[in-house]
Length: 307
Image (cartoon, rainbow, N blue to C red; front, side):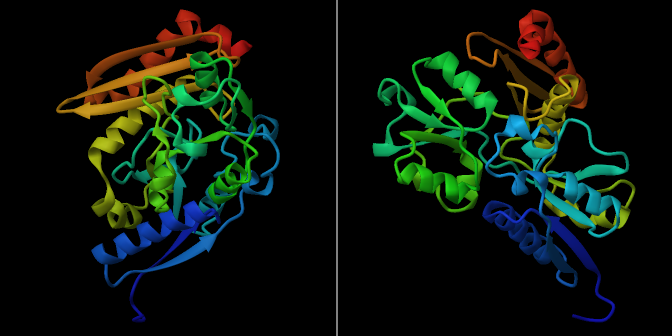
C-alpha cells in the first residue's frame, strides 16, 4: 500500500451472507480502482443480537442497519453494505443510498424435503419463515399450511430444515445464489404467488450525503435500471411507513422509458389480499410507488394494517 493511496472503511453485518456481499463489493471496486484500499469492519446490529426473538417482538425498523448507519453518521466508516430489503422507507438525515448494483434474483425460494414445490407439500405441512409478508401470502394460497417462526442466519435455517424441524422453509433466492447454494432451491416461487419484499435481491451501498469522492468511487457498480426499480419500490414502502412488521410487498420492472410496479398489502392472517399493478415514466418512479400504495390503502389495505 502506497502512502498516498486512498483507504475507504466499509461497514457490514457479520453474517455469512453479509460478508460475502461485502467481499464481492470490495473485490469489484478493487478492479475498478486498483490503487484504492478497503478496510472492512464488522458491526453487530440489533437484529443479530436478538436472533431467537420473533421479528415482530423486536419491534424496531432498521433492526439490521441502525448500528451500521450510526457508524456512518459518526464517521467511523465511509461506506455501508446492506441487503436493500433491510433498509426502512426513510433514511436518517445526512445519509443516502449512493449506489445500487445490478439486482440478483428477486423471488422467494422454497427449500423442502424431497424437493417438493408448494402445491406438492403434504396437507398441514410445517413451513418455516419469520416474514409476515411471506406468511400472509402463503396462508392466502394454502391455508392448511402450519407456519412456524424461523430465525437465525441462512446456514442455521437450512440446518433446522435438514434436522427435521420443518417440512419446508422459505428464504430469498438471492442469498442462496450469492452463497453458491442455488441447488438447495426446490422452487423459485412465482411472483404471482409471493410478491417479494421491497428491494429483495438488491444491494444498497449507503454513505454520507454530499461526499462526492465516495459517490464517484461507487459509480462503476451502479445499475440505473435497478436504481429506478428500487426508487419505485421504496416510494411504496415510504408511503406505508413500512418496516418488517407490515405484511406488504412490491416489485418493479423497467422496460425502455417505463417502469411497472406491482404492490400488495395482505391481512396478517392471510384471509384477504389487495394487489394492483400500474405503470409510469421512469422519471416518476418514486411517485408511482406512492400512488400504488395509496390506492391499495384505499382499497382495503388500511384496515389490514390496523389488524
